[in-house]
Every structure is written in structure tokens, then in C-alpha cells.
Image (cartoon, rainbow, N blue to C red; front, side, top):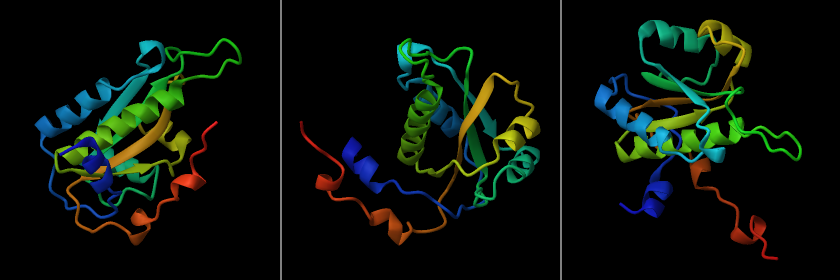
Length: 168
């Protein structure tokens, strides 16, 4: 499969089978996140793997967008390790975590695992439920598992290139 085919075929899964994701597959997904580029290669990401019944119960306290997934990754960054742009102090942590998350979702799809990027969560609840220190910032929750539904019709709605790209 080419990258374009992979990117074209992947969709957000909002209903999962309760089949567990094998540990070897979880490790491949994590390895893809580890390969992601980060600003100045600081690699500030911190990833929580949530697959136990207790962990998944905690996750449900943080977001209603879990879709019954048997696996979730909470992708965070360490604000003490993230690169900062000297001109304005912009922290790269959110962007780094987003790139890591994307790599993980695409590898998951390559492995036959569906996912949804969840940003609709209560950060304070994540911090409390998973006992995160103050320097760790949750950015996204990737819920994952074997898909038990077709893509939403909205998945196929895309802007026309001329509405999103300009040449200068």
C-alpha cells in the first residue's frame, strides 16, 4: 500500500469490537510514534497506554468520546523538555504531540487497527485520573481497536484544493 492509499483509506472509527489489540501491535504503533519528527528532536512526548479495565474506566471519566474502544493512548508532552521558539516563546509541545499522534494512527491503520483522534476531553480529569505531574500536558487521546462500523459520510467531505491552498 502506498502512503497516499493509506492516508486515503483511513477513517475515524466510532464503534469498536471488544477484541483486544495484541501487545506486538501496540508496540509497533508506539514505535511509529517514536519515529515521528519533533522540534529540534527534543522528543518531549509522554504516552500513556490505557488497556486495562481499570484504566479504561478512568478514561470514561475524562471523555464521552471513547466509543467503547479496548485501547487508548493518551499522548502528552513534557513542557520542561519541549523546544521553545526564541522569538516569541512558542512551545512546540502541542505540535510535536500531534505529529506523534498522526504517526501512531497511520501505523495502527497499517496494522488493521482503527482509531479516532479525541481532543474532546477534560484535561484536569486526565491529570487527576492518571496522576500526571504538572509538567505533563495531555494533548490527544487516541482510542483504538478493530473497527465495527463503516466511515461516517462526513469522512468523504473534503475542501476543494483552491479553498485550502494558495501559491505566492
